[in-house]
Length: 169
Image (cartoon, rainbow, N blue to C red; front, side):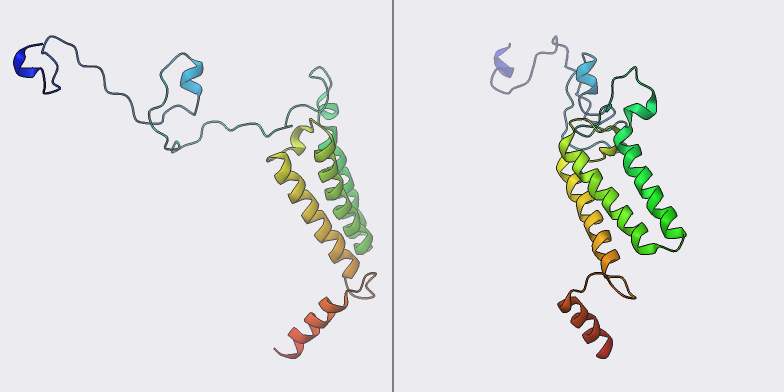
């Protein structure tokens, strides 16, 4: 380096400038590194998502050489019970049909909790799936038991809240 550029931080004219890193986000996270490219230079999320991560436990529920229905048996079990519940509801036994739908969702939560791989039943993280399926199933069962006329379950404070709301509106 010459004396005049020594302390200024400038490089000599003979050195080639390094190409500026691409601060764009064309590749999804980790894709360029897997192909031997440089790491992304920004932490900003991509504008368009090109791929998504598989949820934990989202792999096949049976070996890969098994037919497709056998690989997705947890999802098919839940959907079958929901279908039977909806069919029962259509034939004018709404309370029993809704109980079947709620129990199917609770069963989906139990399957998600117990089995390491549940196929397409895994939508989000294991914790989120269990909470979502369990809460929705429990709410459907509770509402089916409390449905009028002649509810099978009476919760006094909810009955009082309903009458208070209707009386004072």
